[in-house]
Length: 218
Picture 1: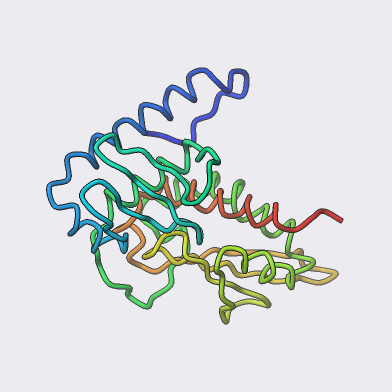
Picture 2: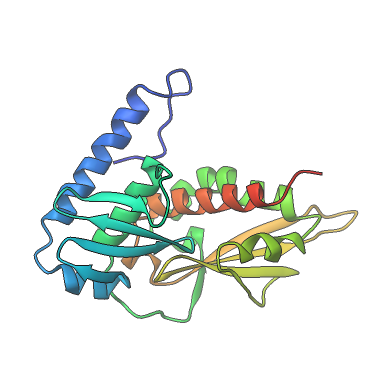
């Protein structure tokens, strides 16, 4: 189900209906998993019992409860956005448990990445370069909120776990008087064993928005 289609004229119309359908399908898929403990192992999710699992998403803990397959933020009454719920269920359902390869790839190297790249650039790369490119030292500060660690790429880079087995590395190049600041996003080569390409766009878009929100505008 395409989570990237938007209807700007009616935010509570077809787009929300599409999200709800996608969520319901993901809930149905999860409810049909016969070996929940095994899928928890594959996804790095904590198995609490037959009625509860706990999943880490962008450094926060979420409970998924059964049989209704409801998603809630632990120790909080805050409503979880529907797109976040869909991402979490898609990750859990899709996880194959493959080990990391240690090889980093760009978004364009992901199957189907070239087709999705214009959306990825608009929602992820351009906002990151625009906000942090001239002040790259702000990126590690923002990333710390999400459990990010410094990496060794570009002028400044960080790695943040979107999900337990989905590390996302963000790299910035500051640029100069002749070259504009730039950014890139890299993944372990096993990324599509955990998320479909379209969901990678949504996950990274959510992360970019959250990082930018962490740093007040000057």
